[in-house]
Length: 434
Image (cartoon, rainbow, N blue to C red; front, side):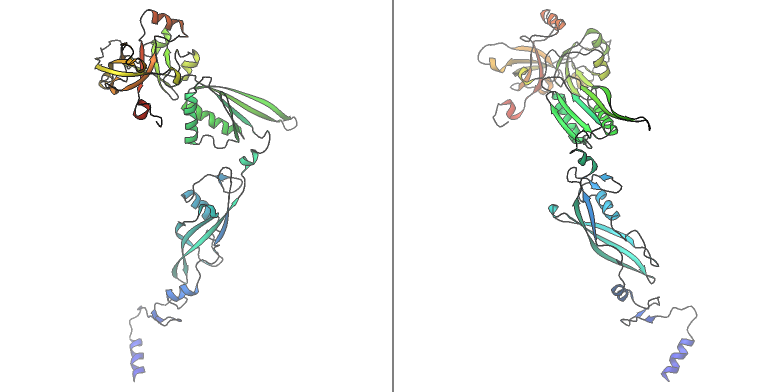
């Protein structure tokens, strides 16, 4: 009687209605599929990660810390970075290719697993999806990458004599080399020396050896963008093949950095001072970039000098910014200075007007010995107050190398003191650990 009722119910079912079936493994009702199994049982039988390697090998250069890509190419990237992740996934076999007669594996997520830096192992947790018998299965697993040491072509060339193709000689012919030390920090900050085979240090500069002409040209372009330089290029024939018309050259680039440094005191020629916005002939070098920034210490007027202008008519500083030339002064008082407007030039801004001050200063060594003090205008007077310590140049006892500057001092056209900057903290109090 019950069988007849069931047959009647199946016979009277509406057409198009899906009929559930039982899973062939666990027996729960499921929708019909090609495997006749539920997703849980199908995941226990089918292996989504089949054909994907769980171990791979990466090669890293111990000298430059770069990673090998392919076809002799090397890439610099940090640990646990996106670039290194992309490189690791490219070395996993079976991840980007589908097996015959099967669906392609789809990568869902990838993340780093922390490992000891000295373990020479990298671990990545991958999450992949794959369609099996009409059901999408997802599985996570860990891939281990073994790091092997291998020298790159550039590091191999460092151990061979005469392997360089292009040489860049950087020189600055001054005693203290403040601009050259600033350039060294810029080279390290921006990594401009990457690709260099070796570096040699000399008394007045450094030599950079490169494996090809292109890397040397990129380095010289960087120098042109950060410091004022002039460059001379030459080449030497090493060998030639007359049959194939191929010659082998070694290239040399001589780069000379402008000898002016920050805080140097200049006495400009009259024509150059007029071309720089009619600035005073006595100026300070405010700072050095690809341009030479000048400032008038008595009025605060600024100007910029390009490398072409300097090398067309090189000038020597009357006082260099060596520490032995600095004199310590104590500020006894100051008064604000109102800048008079000059109709022949652009009026000073409100910000520059408030920077000038008339300082009353005395040498720190003369305190308690005599009553000699000086009253001079200063472009850094807005920073000073009574009791502060400042450094500057004493122009009364200096022997100038420029005859025009010597004549201007004898005529009383030059100030007695040029203040440079204010000292702070332990440097001002002469503490030993400052």
